[in-house]
Image (tube, rainbow, N blue to C red; front, side, top):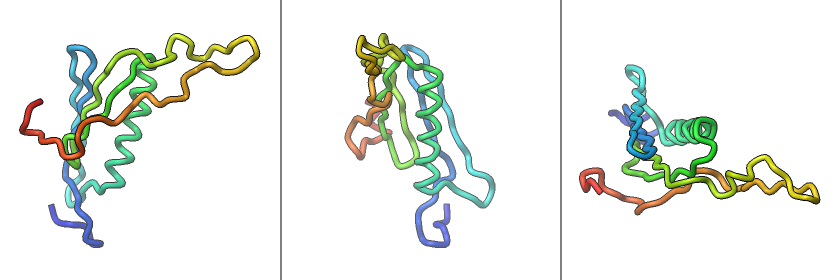
Length: 117
């Protein structure tokens, strides 16, 4: 892929896998002809995926694993902390819902896709 006019790298595809138990959902986003995804486009795509996972799986916590600059896995690691209390308040009216996001980043920053681990 040719670099952008400002010299930044572009990617033709962004690959995202969502792994929940023994099921794997594979999503590949392909840029239109003569276009590519920049780093900011990839970040926006990841934000949309995180919002989707929060809506689709509100009680699960996911770990984000960066495989390469344009490939990511989201792996369900168990129930979200405080998911059983979500939306409930305690006696004095304070919200006891977990304020933590449902996605956490894990793994070494330069993990090789070919390693298969």
